[in-house]
Length: 497
Image 1 (cartoon, rainbow, N blue to C red):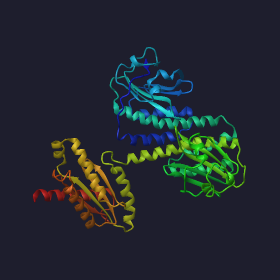
Image 2 (cartoon, rainbow, N blue to C red):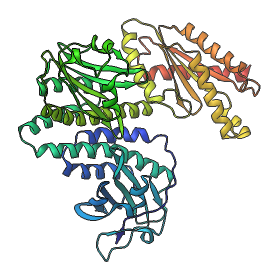
Image 3 (cartoon, rainbow, N blue to C red):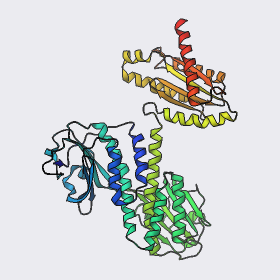
Image 4 (cartoon, one colour):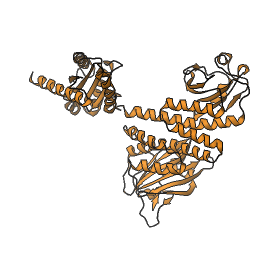
């Protein structure tokens, strides 16, 4: 028998989980059918987490009804309709992940599987969030004790966040499938929006779809910022200029942000919902605005305008609302993808670009170098860093690496890139720089290190090797290999001197 667990949480972090989540988010973003999304989430989860058992529960906060919509035992997945009260589960009740390292059966709410099967021993579960509430839970279980720890719990929490977006998107699509011609048009648009993970492309598709659905003369996506509402994307003859910033003033702003209402303005030039200064900057005779809501936050608004007064109806507002629901999900998914991609290219200790980011950057710079622009590379290596770590401890070693990263960042021009290559090695990629210029750069960095208030008195020093692009050194591997050879010679000279 395989129980559903309900235990206290022990939160932690997993620095490299973003690389994994980036791939999962990309895989799930193209799955639009609700009946397919659960199996896809299961498939993506078991790729990276041990999961003899697995389940997905969905919860209705209004009725407190929770339903096991999908579960699996030893890799075999099943759709089901097993219901229970969501408030009986601590995961759903608290909205926090939980970890059970042994005696899972003692904490179970339900039993899934055959009556004569052995119970799973350990589990980790994470909530699914949407619309400002807990909409369910995701769980993996193992037949052995202590199969999971804080890192696995944090990773499953990240998977659940990505899965929540995918499940909500699939639910919206399922709802649209039950409608007639209008639903078919919305479905096509939803597919188009979710097919891209680039936020600028998603914004463009949102305004194009708004123009088409409402037969409008202008459309815009407004994104909230601290200073006001900025036009993130605009289309049509009367669309406001992209990038324009409007102050958050007037009754309309309160209706959108506070009351989250959709608003139809039948006579825009005479409307008292907006201040006169804002009305003068807008074109058109009538407009309709609906909020963009992601989770429990209003992230902006979607608007359409017409050159004629009284052009929009409540039915049009309902249609724009439905589009806005998909648009907000697609935009948040694209933003999540951008954040995960950024994290996957950053070294978590120093905050510098990591090796993967560096290799991507060099591949771009090589194209310019083959057209004649100079390109040099410096490979830095901290001298005797192992002894430094052993003498002062790993925390001091981490502080030293962060300080070196700050020095390198401060000495590197914005057009260039400095990255943590691995361990105590760093790389600077210098465009428009000769080998001699690269050596001067490296010597400045070494002097800064010797003068550093933390590292200087401890005599922490670094060696470096330099390479320059040429016909014989024309690939990433060749540049690094040449710099490494120069570094080796430099260390040898220092030892014999």
